[in-house]
Amino acid sequence: MTKKTAGNPQAISQTLVPEYIRNLKVYQAGKPIDELTREKGLTRVSKLASNENPLGPSPYAIREMTNALWDIHRYPDMHAYALKTQLSELYNLKPENIALGNGSEGIMAYIARAFLSPGSEVLTSENTFIGFYILARSVGAQLNLVPLTKDYRYDVEALAKSINEKTKIIYIANPNNPTGTYITKEEFDHLMEYVPDHVLVLLDEAYFEYAEEYPDYPNSMDYRYDNVITLRTFSKAYGLSGIRVGYGFGHEDLITNLNKVKLPFEPNLIAQRGAVGALKDRPHLERTIQTNTKLLKECENFLKAKDFEPIKSITNFITIKTGSEEASNHLFQALLDEGVIIRPLKANEMANFVRISIGTEEEMDHFYEAMEKVLPTFNDKFARVSL
Ligand SMILES: Cc1ncc(COP(=O)(O)O)c(C=O)c1O
Image (cartoon, rainbow, N blue to C red; front, side, top):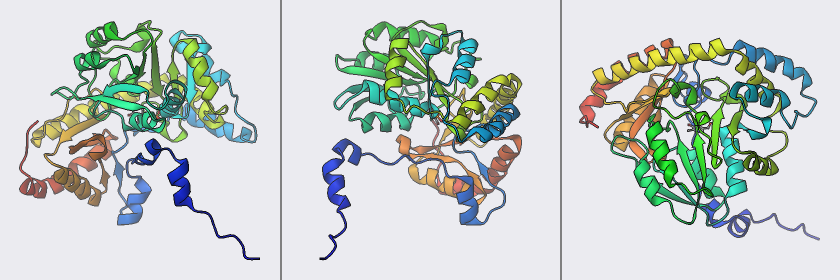
């Protein structure tokens, strides 16, 4: 008897995978350092592409994670008691109000799973965090996108006008990635006047620690809206992108529903302990913010001196207009040849822009040196277009 031939994956993809998943594009992350080192044989590589903390994690976090290695034959605490206790003390909340996940994107995935279904309408802005678009589309939701304002900010007025009876979630990245801009307290209050009680507002505050010093930045913890879920992360200012821990706050009814669809042992044991360690090291966080504030300003000045007009950012990255997709690609490739990885923004529908994450002092010097080398050719090739 002959063995039956192997299966037919194309037919499976065609019949089993819903169209809204077949239409998705795989998320493109920033180019990893190892990849560039391998490809170009470079020894000096500076990655300024994924808005990470260039100072690295706190030694407290490293100590906790190292100790945790001895326990990895055990499942993690599915209630994450230690981490939730620490977060609840820090923010004066009950543990029932706290959601945890594999990065804040992990929690976004639970939100999509728990609150959205095929045909649900989600309202947000164009040119915002792509990860959210993918997650909403992956459950068949329809995205209603409002353009940014001329100064690259969420258009709160247009969002308010676009709420309809089918809107289930309004997603706001505040500050926004990839523009680095934010909605103010006044704008947030204004928007909330238009949001019906049954609509969920998802406030993504991944860059909160960088933004909180701005007096008109609306820290969601100062508000009491029971239809808002706040998302924050250990991936940015806490320097723990690699272990994937995010946290969120919301009314316990909402968090209970998220927990029903959550994989029980996320975040993993090392991630839970690392986050606990990171929260204990306030000076590391303060150093991170101070260093970023100084280097962000310097980078802004450098770019202005080179006739770019950076979008005013309150985060750990800065976005500039290059003039065209070709110019963005040219700059990206030319800097790669010099060992500097930045981020072209085609995937964010901003093909004529690039984004630069703020690195260490040494990495920024590398970026400036590389720019000095590549700009003469860039300027010859591409006429400079102002914002
Ligand atoms: C606005 C925004 N939200 C969420 C995330 C995802 O963060 P996490 O690593 O916590 O999943 C990012 C990462 O770049 C981001 O820019």
